[in-house]
Amino acid sequence: MIDLNGRVAIVTGAGGGLGRAHALLLAQRGAKVVVNDLGDAADLVVAEIRAAGGQARAGKCSVADAEAVQAMADAVLADWGRIDILVNNAGILRDKSFAKMSLDDFRLVLDVHLMGAAHCTHAVWNTMRAQNYGRIVMTTSCSGLYGNFGQANYAAAKMGLVGLMQTLGIEGAKHDIRVNCLAPTGATRMMEGILPAEQLAQFKPELVSPAVLALVADNAPNRAILSAGAGGFELAYIALTQGIALGEQATAEAILERWVELSNRDGDFVPSQGFDQARHELHKGGFPVGG
Image (cartoon, rainbow, N blue to C red; front, top):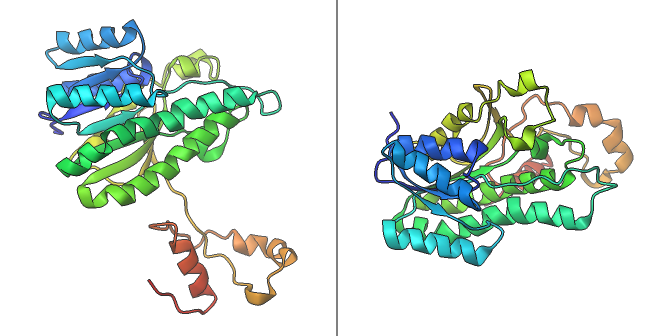
């Protein structure tokens, strides 16, 4: 059993849908939960947690407001003394084809999803470093990982979160801060109209939340991309093929002529950090690899 007694968690966008389900499960496992959302929705989830015997408080602010997020984190620290878990779940949609999308809508979605997660993570990062413990979940999406028509803004933000997760997972490791991504499929307001009702009914938000619990446990992985939906769970990877070596005679024509060989996935691998690409390329070219 994963026991979160003594842990303090912040869940953003927790007034409904996936965030609510995450907050309820973390509280059920003993965590004190900060339910972040706007308006009365946060109060309703806090009341649910308290009625079930848990401890919770509302954190009413927009994640796009860095000062308000920092004030929320400071208040939690003042009252509860620590912050162990952050689940970056808050999000919005402004779907349109790129040809019809305004740059204001593009920027707004990045401000909430990507900058919102950065604001919240920055507000708790030094606290987690000081206590040598932290578990952070970034909510990415299949749209970011694989693309989706009409979601250029959302996809860009969600893939940005993967890059943020990869780097923070490296930087936080020595302080036992583990940072992972969740790619959920849940029947929330954001999904209405995308799938038929009978299919949407299979994607209950509470069937995603076990993935969050796994990613915030003491023995959680680090730098994983865990997909979850309808009770199914998968791992996604950003891998590098073995590729080809063209050396000083490299041409665009040669790349295209050998595209099948270049894309062969036999022996592909997941780099442990960005510089592994350069090491791989040097090794393939027969050059010494240092560092």
